[in-house]
Every structure is written in C-alpha cells, then in structure tokens.
Length: 367
View (cartoon, helix red, strand yellow):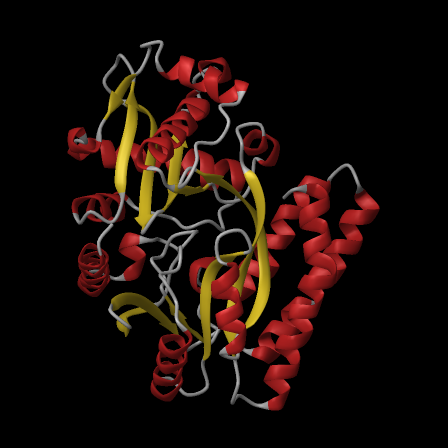
C-alpha cells in the first residue's frame, strides 16, 4: 500500500462524511470529521465536543468501556456472583469517565472501523501532531485507538515517551504472514475445503452489484448487531458502497444459487496490516454450511498470498486460536496533559481499573 493511496483514501473518507449526515452512513454515529497531516501521511480525525450526544464506541470511550463491557457480561451468565461483581465494578466507570470527560475527544487515525492500524510513528512527528491538535481543540482529550502489544511494541514506547497513557481495550488475535507462513492448522484446511466445494460462488470485489450492498448490510446486521450487540456500528448500504467505490474497503462475497449473497467480508489495509471490519452471513442457512468458516478461509488466503499481518480483531477466541491466531492486548493511547487535575485523576482511576480488573478478565476468559 503506497503512501499516496492511503492519503487518497483519507481524502475520500473525509469527502464522504462531509457530503452526508453521519447517521445516513453509520446510523448510530454522531461526530465531526476532519483531516490532519502526520508527517507525510494524511489521517482522518473525528471530533466530539458534546459528551451528552449519544454515539457509538468508534468515537465514545464511555460506550466502549462501560456499555460494551456490561453487554459482554452475558458471557458470564453461568457465573452469577462473578457477573454481579464485575457489573458493579464496571458501573463505577460511569462517573469516572464523565469526570475525566474522555468522550470530549479528538481521535486521530479514526477510519470509523473497529480496528484502525496505526501508520509508522516517530517521536518528533507524534509530539508535533499532538501539540497541533491540542492547540486547535482546547479541553479535548487526544486519542488513538488500536495499538497492540504484538505489532506495535515500538510505537507504544514512542507514545508513552510523548506523554500518552495506554488504556487496555480488548484482547485480539493476530495471524502473521509477513515474514514466514504460519503453520497450516487442521481447521484452516477444513475451512478451505468447504470454500472450494463449489456450493457457493466466490464474488470478487469487481463483481459486486448495486443490490449486493443492501444484502451485505442485512447480513452484517444479522451477525454484528442482532447476534452480538446493537452497540456495534450501524453501517448502512450507502456507507458500504461508498467505502468500496473509493477503495477504502475491498468487499468479497459468497453467492448462493438464488443469486443473493449468502456471505460477505470486507477488508481494510494499512501498510502490511489487514483487517476485516465487516463480516456477515445468512444465519437462516444451516450452520453445517460453514459460511463463517468459508469467509475466514478467504481472509487467511488473502493474508498468506499478500504476506500481510491479519489483525483478526476480538471475539471467537478458540475459533481463532485453532486457526493459528496469536493473542495480543489492544490499547487506546490517551493524551490529557494540560487538562485539569480532577480530569486527569479520574482518567488515571479508569486506567487502573482497566489494568487491575479488565486485563485479568480478558486474559482469563479470552473475551
């Protein structure tokens, strides 16, 4: 991926969100978009100045850390006492995050996706950019999402030296094909065999039709919203079509005999890192069809062929481990130097709760 291509994508994303109200593109998002230079890179930024306006976790730490965490406690339904204790601890975060005003933020490198792999970082560029953002947006916290302790160790050190603090976010899984090919696990072989059995026709990025985006949104909603949580981004067909048309996302799909998409996956690339922020499949079809497994086989094949690091994101821990995924802890980098002592203290307490309670839970239960 060339620098110019990334800059062109950033421009396209900004133009898209300047042309439409955000809710027409992501139904539960309220934010202002912008662009900012970062060395030779041009990065999208989002600005949220009114914490009282509800929005989704892409721009809202209170939703990401509190609402989303409480929703995730459904995984502990068999452990009622533990679930109640964790819920009590999580709810302590509401007043702390309000006091820290973490939702009053400028987020850099926000592509409005679950995972935003960071560009190459130098200390001087990071410090200069942070100063510029702080001066232009007084009273705002500066945030970068999606740093992880697998591929961003050096970057995390640079961020800390620049005054950022790392707030643990979630446990993710990495499939690294950059320098060597990962072992081909049995489950990946089986997934590939399903993909190649011919029951569904592979739809390449150039073969997507107008009606496919409507269907893609339905399939995404079945999985990410109805099965998981309505706190996830409510991507619209217009968003999907525009992101694909502007080369920001690359859609692929699986078409059934009736001509409709039965599965969809969209890839986002930054440098040598790829993610799959949009996945969906027809949940009305029998699980034995293996649609999700086939979509994951498409992703693994793409990572292997292009020799990329595939950030598999969070969730489905055992599924991803059984296909070679390596666990990593993801962080949000938060800069609040210069804000009031009360706001900084509240943010420190939030971070300590995440470190002392959140991280052990994530690692013990592989959420």
